[in-house]
Length: 320
Image (cartoon, rainbow, N blue to C red; front, side):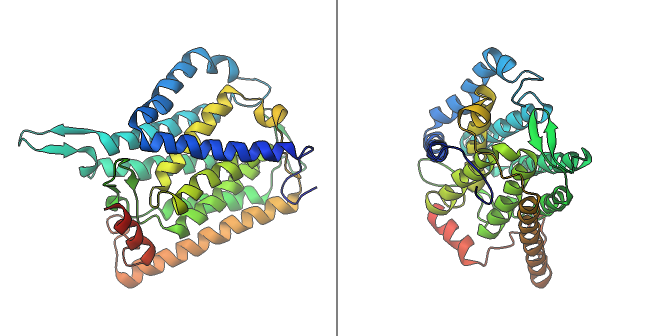
């Protein structure tokens, strides 16, 4: 038995590794080829919505995918994918005879932080909801095992802090290479790590026995490309890998329960420690960020907070 997870067959971890690399591969395909992005995040979900999901994700199904949360999360993730494709590629010829791009509009740059904040808020609500269930010894809710505890409140607060520390969105720009990625340089490694810890704790708390996939693998699938493949494009990586995973789960809902289960150890101490780490990291990020705002007299709604850091400057240099 491990600390976080227990798997009856080591083969399940091999499948987990395959899922990780498959998510990264399809994310790369959707990133570098416009036609692939449209196919993956518009055509495929449209077909699945009409012909597949009404059956595989029907309300009350034995795998828990028929809840309001799964449906909302699916379409909000896909909305992010399509919105970011629009920011990257939509252009038109204006009355002045010049070519204009959607990303040049400041109102359009409000979309990435808005869809990100909505996705975080959805999960925060779910953490608080799981606490309200009062399952202090654990139990089954909507066909998923879960356990209520102070960790839900701790991680809900961490998620709120994660929303508050979203910054620098008016500095978003489109890379000059052929992939035309959406680059958000102010979203440096400190915020990404704080987000990862919070989101992992959320999946561990609320989708416990699925969290090896929808938490650990899914977060690595967007964090690895952010640090080693296409720096500065974290939100684009996150939206696309999330969209890919949730479409797969809605289509094959028995995957994490029957085909390749990796359940948690159901240890309350582990739940507490995971959420404590998430809360501590987001408190530290918020304190550090507010200090920068005060010392440099910055406006967090307009200014880029990390423009003087090496991490920020490196991302800009590589993409402009």
